[in-house]
Image (cartoon, rainbow, N blue to C red):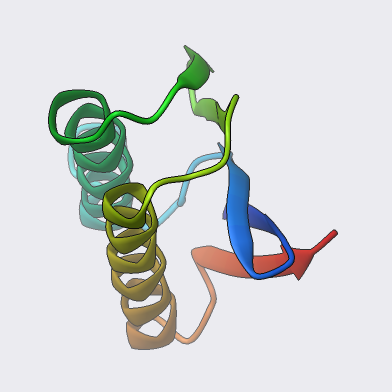
Length: 106
């Protein structure tokens, strides 16, 4: 299962972490894993390319840790809203069996 945790402080995004593998199908055939990876990678790349946000990213097999090092901009927040919407829709489509998404206020 992929577990995504998004952290916010005072309703402003501060970080997200994605960890695990969906287990929907064999490696290379797992459409849930591919969809989650595409959303996460596109969000990180879009924040880097289209915003002035300062970020730190770490990744390795099945794991991504992302955090804003300064307060998130309006554009960055919109991209994060889009990520959360996409991930939540995927989780609900598969009845939370392969992906869970938690948004925590810290």
